[in-house]
Length: 192
Image 1 (cartoon, rainbow, N blue to C red):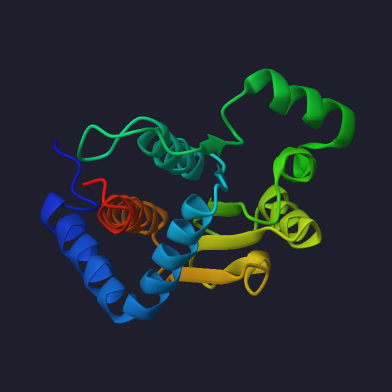
Image 2 (spheres, helix red, strand yellow):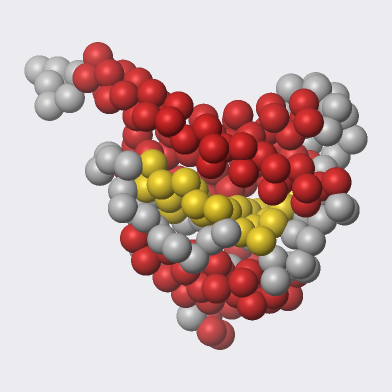
């Protein structure tokens, strides 16, 4: 018997509704693009982080900046703070998992850098601590959040809260946002 709780058509419909809701956030998107482009033009780097599926988004953003998105071009400086399992387990073991990103932000972030965090709930303690560490370092920050924004709400210089309760739809929206951001970065820097 096929699984009938949610049909593919229902999932597509909900995803389309979530994507449509993003169109009203053009001003936030413009701020996000401006922050990223300013960072890269000034010789800064983009640091990213997240947990679980949001860690995949953080990795995705960093690899597309260092590698390429749409066209062959010079690499752009970016680093996913959730990419090194030895570093994560070292910091987690010695200081607690809630500090795995903040400790790296403290070590690596400079005022001209930009921290981009992904969290579908906004309630991950390590994301909250990373945003606070960025503020202490004078590093600008962007939070791509979901639901109500959770404990991370209000901690970033720029925040984009994808409303809704479905984690999968929120993560899909975050992926669309990061793809649009990458396209805009390449266009604004004359790379695409």
